[in-house]
Length: 59
Image 1: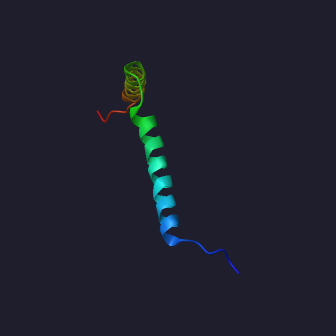
Image 2: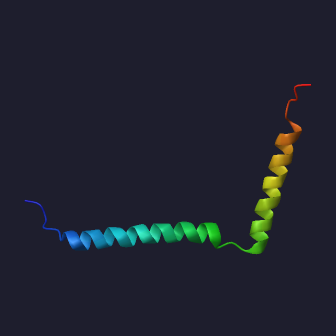
Image 3: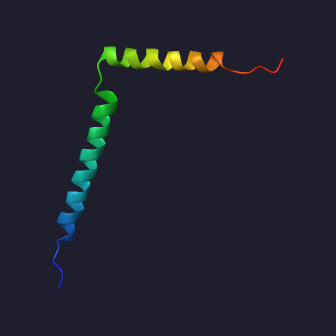
C-alpha cells in the first residue's frame, strides 16, 4: 500500500515551494545594483546599434 498523505500539508508545501521559486526569480530580476543595470542597458544598446547597422534598406 501507499503512504498516507495529508492533502492539506501537501498543498501547503507546494505553495511554499512555489513562493520560494518566485522569490528566487524576483531576487535575480530586481536584486541588482545600479551599476549592473547600467551595464546591462549599455550592452543592450550596443546590440541594438549593431543590429541597426546591419539592416538592409529597400531604396
